[in-house]
Amino acid sequence: MPNMQSINQNTMSDALPDFRNWGVILRSLLLVNGMALLVAIAQASSWQDILKRIIDISTLLQPVLLLNLLLLFILNSWLARLTYKQGATVVLLLAVTVTLMIYHLGGKLYISAVDYGHFHSWRNALLSSVIAGLLLVYFRFRAHALSPALDEARLQALQARIRPHFLFNSINAVLGIVRADPKRAETALEDMADLFRMAMAHDGDLVTVRQEVALARQYLALEQLRLGGRLKVNWYTDNMPDDALLPPLILQPLLENAVYHGIEPLAEGGLIDIKLYRNGNEMHLEMYNPRQEQGSHHVGNKIALSNIRERLALQFDVEASYSVEIGKDFYHVHIKLPYVKEPLHLPSFS
Image 1 (cartoon, rainbow, N blue to C red):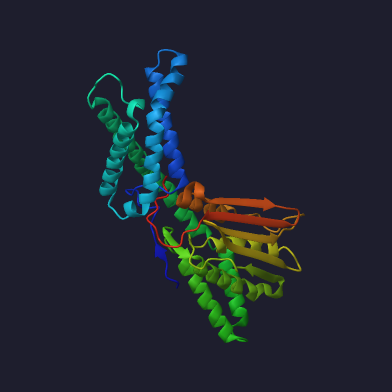
Image 2 (cartoon, helix red, strand yellow):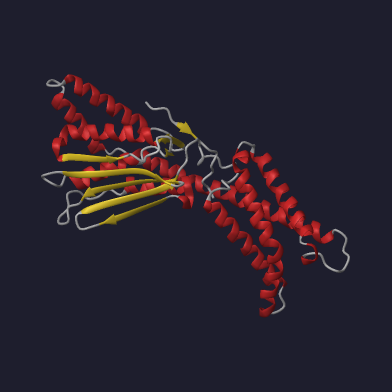
């Protein structure tokens, strides 16, 4: 069984959010500016005064917020190695330090002509630490709130990844060749064992794309035992980074769907095209299979495919996408996810 690299990013509810995740960045921007709007409304004496209050607040808020997010983005890998309490302390101290620095560098833009000593600067620093603390509480609460959804997704994955019909078909195919070609039958049984071991793997683990492709080839070898020449596959992996990491058993359910709904209904069989490649900081997985326009071979079981969507969303938030294009005689799936080449402490509860 291939070794898997665990990041357990979905189960670490007491971990700092991934400050390089666009979901975290966007939510931080929206939440902080939303709080600023509420403060402006609370302080305003008229509708016209709201805009003035927002501008006054934003002159300090936006540079502080953007610089904090930039520094957290840079320090993300280092913060991930700290305990939650240590990391949270660093985030709060960073908020205070950045606020004081920008406040004093801004000079007369922020400092009133009336001498209040250091009251204004430390008041703003305290407010920054409070806002940062509220954000940390929000992300931690969201992690706990999403934990049941993740557990349900794992349960569905165990139930839907390799459907019973595949097990029965594979056993029958092996029985059909066990006397005529015992060596091939032995290899097929080993492939089945690997597939079902992988099906029981923990969802918090990531595997290399190389391992995922090897497992997919084992699955296709089993299907070709019974479909023979009707099942043809083209692999396009010249631009595939072998070290890219992705959730286990993303590819196999897509292939099973392609075989079950695309190849089996056609008497002459068909061709499945599989493309895996890297484009910048993104990993792409595309699959094309034929589609029977009229009639229906099977009632589609969407559980496995919807489970892939859910796992990608929980694991990578807005940085992953899953799209489907259905044509007259083809079915196209396109998955995009971040290019990750080493296990990172990346809480996806953003």
